[in-house]
Length: 223
Image 1 (cartoon, rainbow, N blue to C red):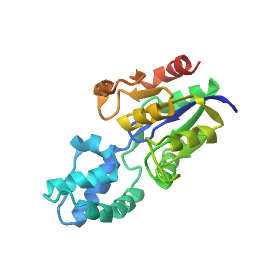
Image 2: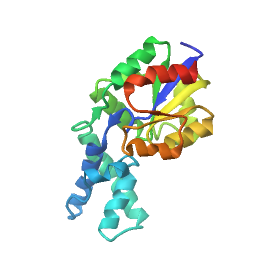
Image 3: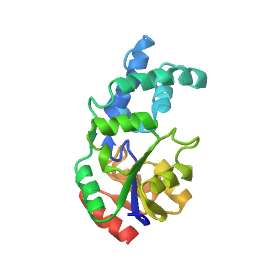
């Protein structure tokens, strides 16, 4: 596989719908503050922007917006709550496993590059029974920097045995597309993530409507 093409996946909102468990971890913090549940399914997009984004939204709804120190103070509590219930509602998107297996059969290396902390990402992928499908996993704290800095992406490709010039990223947010632009590789966004088809506004190199189409798309973009 050395020198072959590589498909790098984001995790939250791309490989798996993690929103319900993420929102539950934030609500656990708000309940501990005595505020009750402040987030619901309508806040899925915020959930995919991370724990601090959820805390900021909750604080805003409590009339306490802008307190960065308080957000940072509660963030470890949120991670603890999330780690204790990481795969209660989370599911891989339909066809994801089959698409990854097809990519591997086609000679592509596959890796994960996520802004979820590495330990949580590893635990989640193991809980979902899919960690062994991926040659590498790089998380938010694997390096001192995270996406859209190109370094985590480059590390994911190299750990998977690929070369950056023959790789692509599949994601669901502007962060993933900015990563692709920073590295100089194709950036594909899923149309079944939190924004749905509206993600086309970011003008990715391609949109993925369903995982069944990924092997052909990768072959077209990577050769």
